[in-house]
Every structure is written in C-alpha cells, then in structure tokens.
Amino acid sequence: MSLIQQLRTIFLSTLCLLFTTPALYGQLPRLKVSDNQRYLITEQGDPFFWLADTAWELFHRCDRKEALYYLDKRASQGFNVVQAVALAEIDGLRDPNPYGQIPLENLDPRKPVEAYFEHVDFVIQEAAKRGLYIALLPTWGDKVFKNSWGVGPEIFTTENAYFFGKWMGNRYRAYTNIIWVIGGDRNPRENTTDLEVWNQLARGVEEGVGGKDRALMTFHPQPAKPGGSSNWFHEAAWLDFNMHQTGHCPNQATYRIISHDYGLTPAKPTIDGEPLYEDHPNCFNAKELGYSIPDDIRRIMYWNVFAGAFGQTYGCHAVWQMYTSDRKPINAPLRPWKVALDLPMAHQVKHLKELMISRPFLSRIPAQELVLTNQDDDKTFVAATKDLYGSYALFYFPTGKTVQVDLSSLASSKLTLSWFDPRTGNSYSGGTFSRNANQRLIPPTEGEIGHDWVAIVDAN
Image (cartoon, rainbow, N blue to C red):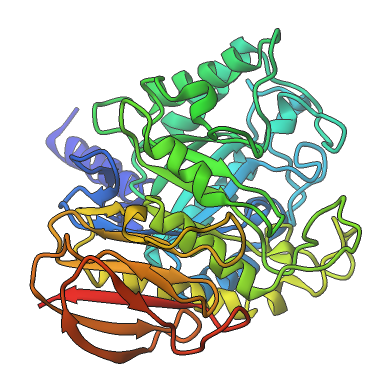
C-alpha cells in the first residue's frame, strides 16, 4: 500500500470514528458513586443530584421531531436524567415505532434490528447535547414475566438475556450519558429463572461495556417491601445503587422505604425511581378514585430526599406513555403528553434540586432525631436532614404543623432561619436565634391545612 493510500485509509477511519461515536455530540462527564457510597458524582468529583423524568415510551412512540421537543422541554425545566426503555412496554416488540421499525427480528433478542436502534442512538445523542443522561432499560419486565397486565411476549432466557445485554453494552460503550437500568416493573419470582435472567442481562451489559469505568447500573422493581432492588440484588457486584418504585398512591410513608435501604450494609446510594405520577389515578382499589395533585407529589419527593435518597424521579401519567388522542389510553390520562409537559410539578421539581445543591451535598445525612415532637406516619410528618459537620439542618413541613426540634448539634451558637417555598423556590427570612436543644419551629402558614415549607437553619 502506498503512502497516499495509507493516509487516505487513516483519514477515512478517523472520519468514520467521528461520525459513529458520541464525541461528535458533546459527551457528558461519566457518573460514579461518591467515596462515602451515598451519592453520585461526576468523574471530576462534582456532586450530581439525580432529577429524572419517566419517559418509558420515548424511543418507541416518538419520532425525531417529537423526541427533540420532549428533550428540549425537560432540559429547560431543570431535569438531568430521562428514564426510557429500548424494548418498550406497550407492545414494543410488535407495534412499530413511527418509522415502521420494530426492535427485534422474529422476536429474537439475538437479532436486533439496526434501523430501530439507530433511532435510539439519535435520541441518546441528542439528550447528551442538552445535558441529559439516559437511564436506559434494555427491556421492560414483561418480556421476562408478562403478568396479568403486561403485553409481553415473554422472550428472554438466561442465554439470550446475556447475548442481548452484551450487544447493548457493546453498542453504547462509548456513550458517557448512559446509566443502565436492569429490570422494568417486575420483581423476580421465586422458583423461576427470573433472577438468573436479570443477572445474565446485567452480566452481558458489563461485558459489552467492558473496562473498569463502566457506566452505573441499577434495577427497577415493582413496589416491594422492605426495600426495592435491594431485596434481590443488594450484594450483587453489578448493582451500584438501589432503586425503588414507591407506587402511585399518596398515603404511603415512602421515607420508611428509603430509610431501609440507606441502613443496609454494604452502603449503597438509594433512590425512588417511580413515585406517584402527576395526573395519575391515585389508587386502583380506592373507594373514591381521584387523581394525584402537586401537594402529594412534592411531599413524597421531599420525604424521600430528606430520608437519604441521592435524588428523585418525577413522572407524569400522560408523558410516560406519550399519550395522544388517537392512541388507546392506559388508566385514563387526562390530557395529551405535550400539554402535560407543562403541568405544575414539572416546573416545581427543579426547586428541590436547587435547594439540595445550595448547601454542602456529599456530607448530608438523614437526621430525623432532630424532630422531638412525636409523629404519626401521616401526611403531616415533618422530615429532617442535616450536614454531618453541622453547617445546616433542613426540615420539610408538608403542612403548617408546629414541631419542637433539637438544634444543639449544629456548629455555631448563632443560627439563621429561613423559610423555603417548594412551590416557587423562593426563600423568606425567619430571623436569627441562639442554638438550643429545644426550639419551636412554626411554618409561615400555620395549621393542618397550611402549605408545605422547608425550614433552613444555617450555622453562622
């Protein structure tokens, strides 16, 4: 081969590399677990507060224009993670995407269809441009266990799960904005191969990605107690952090579920990956069926984070299924997905992220012992968190209930109080006072029907 031919080959190879890796699209910093095993950080060591949206059907039901519309909107609202599924829930194996493509040939996980995954590539790359990570589920759980409400079909075995996981891992090994999520709304059944199927899928992803700096990995379950993914995989080497689904009913002490996994050994970060959705029917068995309201969603989110979660996922009932009037609805969405993108909580969740990163982040710990008042597990429960070194304490008040708190562990004898409004992100001065072991905190709107607030106590 002549020198000119060699140079031409090198040039073409380099050009090909540029157009087939996400470097062209602006890579994001890889994420990893913090040294204290409680939070996520970037590879540069910066704190990362997970603020995700569930867009399960994003790859399956949105064309490129719609996907960009969605990504632009969520990025503008402060989200930094999108949870989406490659082999989607709503008949994702047989119902084609907007371009007439299905993901697998003959329903065979060993035969992925290139054209379908080129569309997935496009969406993930465009997400990176907008500063969004993709929490990528290789498959929804009904492809392992259909259950009564799933479409399926059940196609995975321990052998083809490993193959598909490795194929997926290898395809996206160069992408730095991916977090792998094994599972998909199904819990492993006893006396079946479910557990091994999920382990083999995870093993395949690990081997496909390769290298010691692989992307983070977790498992998305159905609602479960006492923990979430920890019930089956807490000690699995591939599971970097635990994920819960706390479900779609408002009357749950979700902080108890987060606290359970926070207390496990070895320590691993934990998060609620599917809470009560906005505009969702609250409880399918409720005597009076209603729809979720922002107050309920805010309460669950702040409870979870104050109990030790490293971030929080949001969801909207119309958005996860990308509902439009010409599609068969699942559980009665109230409006089309593009309209639902602007529901109140979609604009309010960023205030939670902004609050938590406004103070030392990696040294934050749950601190429920600071609340001295006896409490029931009801909607008035006041949750507490603080800095390990005593620089601040935060108290979330779902209502205007007054409580007694112990501030003696804070690092200064002079303390400053401010009241943070979770609906607007605004803060109001509450004055200064001396550190003591029995301080009364009274929210700005008092009483059982008062609005929610966060009391911020800073050590000066």
